[in-house]
Length: 142
Image (cartoon, rainbow, N blue to C red):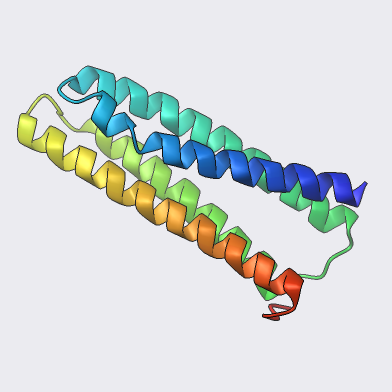
């Protein structure tokens, strides 16, 4: 049972990374369409939150069913999850509340969208790399 949860957690993380990469295209697809950018950002945020919540749920199941102790790695994953959700919600609220009909603001928000997405990808990849190194015995985060 634990193996299946690990596999589902791993698959969800890969799906999430793929989703983040696809999200980089949103500012380019909605080049001059500010309403489209706002709508695409909303859909992106909802899917983002759904996937991240599924990842957290499988992680919690794994933690509870595997009788793991709270380790530095679990704390880091929790902090990264909170950061990802916080930043994504703030990003969407900024896009939602701002008048993006102004061309300069629209360009600025698209730039911020790309930068935030880049940071999110880096955080997820860093945690995945740390967990791989931990499993291979290169790093001890317990």
